[in-house]
Length: 139
Length: 139
Length: 139
Image 1 (cartoon, rainbow over the protein chains, first blue to last red):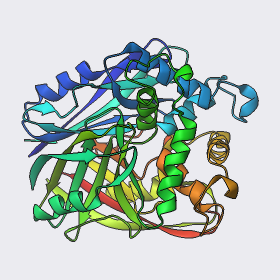
Image 2: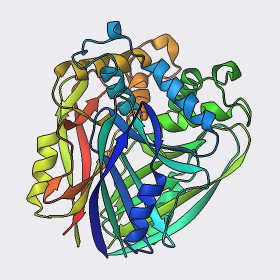
Image 3: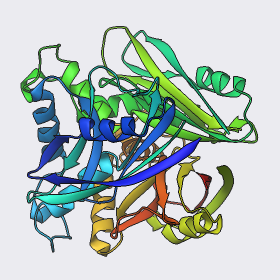
């Protein structure tokens, strides 16, 4: 059994869900393991990870609307506003989703379901470079 | 150290929390490792995983009510309704909980606390067959 | 490759986010691995784990206020109240955050981002001793 790690940099252009399934799967498959465990770790507190439906586009916009509603960009609601009105809601939306996901690798493929995609959830309005630490263990 | 994987199929009969602790623990213990890490990965976007209290039944019904309230089955609230009024709330409730859990194995047992059970959280109204990818690493 | 495990006991004095980054990092670094995967598992259903911003104090108090608002200590809202008005909200806040986190170890360090700290989120009002199962795999 062996381990491989890397840092994957992802450029986000806007708030919302960005499909990173292909980039993650490509890296994982290039390590040439048949069985293993892939861990994705988002090194930020205002962007997060989500596994969600990869088919209907409305699922993603409804998810984005839900998080915008539950943790609104309303400066009056928060004490922390040094970094703009989208910063504190970004921390809350990150807390409600995940910064880490581990996905088994079986038969040389990530064990994602048919309708599952891996998304980077950018919670800030301005473009950012987000670093994901990837760790693959397997053989 | 070695790895074992399997797909566990779980039949859900209704919306809500289904205790899968015994099925998970049985499989894990049958692999005969004393120390390890078990990963459970739910291959769906409208069902999720939760570790919660295994004693008082009201905790589970209160949890179900909370998620029903925070992401209601209200067709007017969502753009995505092709698959019925319980589908989009199912995606949101999945996003708010987990599709993956990793639990250490210590002294040949899952390191769950006394009051912790592992639940499959079915968010759809109709019965479904849910596939969980299990990955155990240990020795 | 090898595995090490331990139980880390953390005393909480009050409701809210308690920074446990140093205690976790100290244990992980003492195991003398250069590459690996650290898993933290909280063995409770009314306390949870969160990776969040370690700089501005207001981020933490805003997070605490958000969870207090979304799952209020309102006895009328829940059927389960045997253990006091802060118990059922504690279960809900635990469900909305995490009981498990896995963090890659790269170049002998946890791959946390600059602004990320690891927090134990105590959801009960009274002091508690919380047990975290730690599992490190690496070499």
